[in-house]
Structures are given as structure tokens and as C-alpha cells.
Length: 218
Image (cartoon, rainbow, N blue to C red; front, side):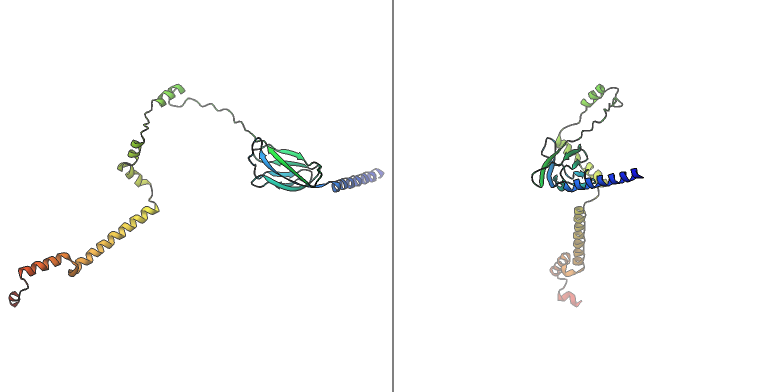
């Protein structure tokens, strides 16, 4: 029983000592920016964790700048995907502000070596190289453009390529123009006064005297 009481008293004293020590720690405003090691390129959105204060977490902005409050002696860990984590300890400075620059080293992942076999149906890489160098690709840009713009090529493309909005609008406008022209021609043909052929026939009849009084009597 006495041993248990001593243990409880010791635990209470230790807790009080830790709390007193934490209260005595100096509060510091920590600020700075994060760049890739050996460059001036900012590392954005780095996760910042205070391991000495309940893993309190902060984050740098898109330009790598950060600012948070910590205690002197706190262990701070900077981590980001693709970079090695950086650990610092907040030093005891004269003022209540601490500014630092964090450099993070990019991690380089080495992929396993892949050996490509001989390209089929060639028996060896040397045979493939000979066949490839013997290809007649043709580098004449003018001939290539003429071949791509030939009526046969354009006709083939028109079957598989959908019309654009501009082409549809142009086609509809052209169709409306044709319909209006046909409608106007039909109206002119229906009205003799607007039909040039009817006027020509009338003039010929007048010249022949078809409308003379002598003929009208009969």
C-alpha cells in the first residue's frame, strides 16, 4: 500500500514538473519558405508536423511559404511526396520570431532494368536496323500535302469526320439561299407581268398585229 502511494505521488510530481517545463518554454513564431535542394524552385503544400506538441500539423502554401507558432526545442518535421523529410529543432532565439529556409532533397526512384528482346519478325536488332534504314518514308512536304488534300483523301475523311458547327451553318445558309431563289423564280413565272418570256411574247404579238382592230372584229 505504501509502495502504491509513493508511486502515485511520484507520478503526480513528474506530471507537474512536465507541465511546469512546458509552460516555461518560450513561444516562437516560426516562418520561412521551402525550396528544392540546390535550386530556387519552391516546393508547394509541404506538410509540417510538430512532433513535440501532439503532432500538430500545418501546411505551406503554393509558393512554399509557411508560418506557425511553436515552442523552443520543439521537433518539427517537413514532409512532401517525392522529397525526403526534413527535421529541425526550434532554437532559442533572442526575439519571439524565428525565420528559416528549408531545403528538401528530391527522391530518385531507380526502376529495374528492362531488356527488350529482338523485335519480331526480325531475328536480331541488327536486321531490324537494316530494314528500318532501308525504308522509303519520303520527306517531300509538298507531295505529302498534295496527297493529304487529294479529292480521294478528302472524300474518305468526309465519311468518318463529323461536320463542324461552321460547316453546318454554311450548308444551311446555302440551302436557304437556294430555296429563296427557287421561290422567287416560281413567283416570277406565275405572274406574267414579272415573266420576261411573257413580255417578249407580247411584243412579238404586237409586231405581228395580233391585237389590231381588223382582227378583233372577226
